[in-house]
Length: 235
Figure 1: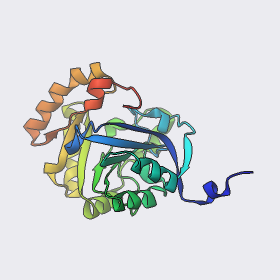
Figure 2: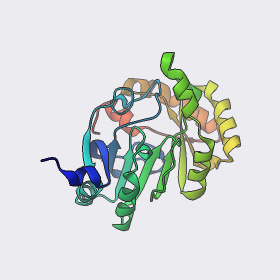
Figure 3: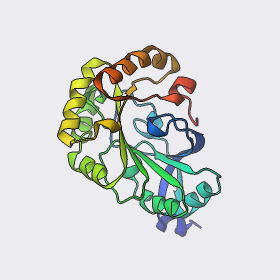
Figure 4: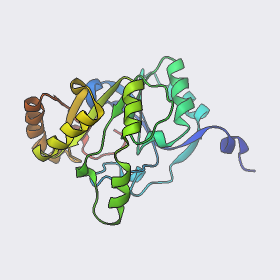
């Protein structure tokens, strides 16, 4: 007989749960428990988790209660919700409130295209620039979705946040400057991160992006997991 409780209780579709170091932003190097959800409303050309976006796996359907118990059983203060786009999933709202009530530090990694009344200590906002737009039939949908000013405004106003821009080179800087001006964003919370999916790509590009960040008054955003493990899953 089907489990009616699982169908009716708040739930989400889970890609994976794993423990690793936070590789990006101001908490880089922090021991963290990652919760990766299935599903994304964007189609970034350089996406490093296509199994949650371009070609999403079915994943595991779990109730919020089950997942919360599983996460709280781990002796790990920092919990990171990531994707895909975790804010697509309504179940993240009760999950984040339960985690915070239990004393966990909650980071949500989002592209800033969807708002939900979550509980979060840090919104790690990674706006997608035009360098993310794919060619072909997916371009129009991606372009229409990747910038949501009203959503970004609420996230920046209601949560402690950091901004992470994936950068390929100096040609991306004017677009970043326009974005910051349009959203009246705090420059001191901006990280420039190298666009890299492998360790070799990261090693090649990171020095140049570090220089761009220093010269432009931004913070350089390391991607420790890419530098060490490339595109391996579960790390």
